[in-house]
Image (cartoon, rainbow, N blue to C red; front, side, top):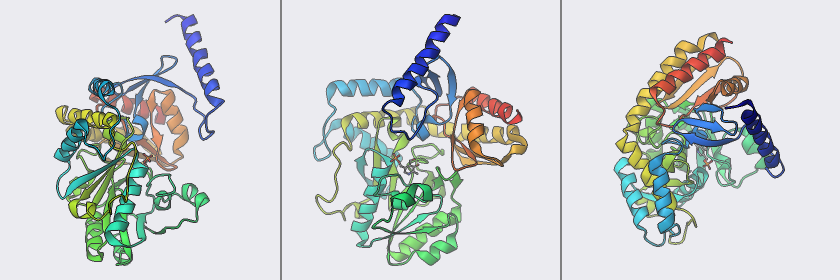
Amino acid sequence: MTDTTQRDQASATSELLARDAAHRSGLWRPEVAYVRGDGALLFDADGGEVIDCMAGIAVASVGHANPRLARALAEQAQRLIVCPQNLGNDTRTAFVDKLFSFVQPPLNRVFLVNSGSEANEAALKWARAATGRRRFVAAKRGFSGRTLGVLPMTWEPKYREPFGPYGMDVTFVRYNDADELRAVVDESVAALLLEPVQGEGGIHPADQEYLEAARETTENAGAMLIFDEIQCGVGRTGTFLASEAYGVTPDMATLAKGLAGGVPIGALLMTDSVAATMPKGGHGSTFGGNPLASAAGLAVLEEIEERRLMAHARAMGERLMDGLRRAGGERVREVRGRGLMVGMELKEKAAPVIAALRSAGVLTIAGGATVVRFLPPLVISQAQVDEVVRRVGDVLAS
Ligand SMILES: Cc1ncc(COP(=O)(O)O)c(C=O)c1O
């Protein structure tokens, strides 16, 4: 590439971001614009390349520009995009069949939506329908979404408090404290909502005893147990649902993010008996289960199966965590996670390290103030994992 071409592209980037600034919401001030992807790589408008360990926050499960996903979308777009869930559709049926080859009974039913928040909102409505109760229990450090329907269940006070008070009765409990669950979950509770591995809160896997206590206390109280698998589900931790590894089955589980590889989707999985409690007309979604998202979901599940991406996520996750533990040095407090859901907790603020990592060609994201989160596409290669570790080592040594 000539100097002139590089200069032209660099000015194209600043022009793009300046134009963007005129109309964006003001929530963010991007410093880079990505224009193309390939597997676990992202390319910015200047031709710069990063290894993507963010994947749109656990979304690009089968990698950027995945050929099977792209083909499925193009073919479906030329055939049929619109067909709501009150009508049948061949692609949706194929997707749902495939989904239930990954999800085991007693989770037999699904309601399809367009995002994680919507999936959680649907779960809360179903919990109310199933129990006739109004009180919910959620975990400290938990993240359930930003819409007003689920914001009361999101722990982070700076997200939640400015928009209250809410018409919902929510009690927050300490994560991984089984005794507190036993004290709080009683017959007034409609549902306990937990992430089997907390994501936004800084990558905290549940203890075995904790999820078992969650199942036992909700069963004894006649309350619903809802697992929010929006970030940790769809194979990221090495099993399709992260909760599978614990042998604990909820009454409902929510999925979104990686389920359609980047096309908006959400899913509420339920048992037969829970599904049957919603009155006719009690819930709905215009776009939920549309053929385009279903085609994408089917392509993602086929890709996960044929390329054995869950076993790959397990192996690459172990390699990444081992590597980060070796390369991290003095500035790292702990490396933890499950599969390709990895957190590197620092003894200092994460933001400057995340910025330095981006300059070194590794895109990551914070999980709380001191945790660097690694959520790469499940297709990341061994060589790319090793390169990520090498670059993290260099940045932390500098
Ligand atoms: C565990 C969890 N639940 C819910 C959500 C909300 O999903 P969405 O942003 O698709 O509404 C997120 C998003 O980060 C999440 O990580």
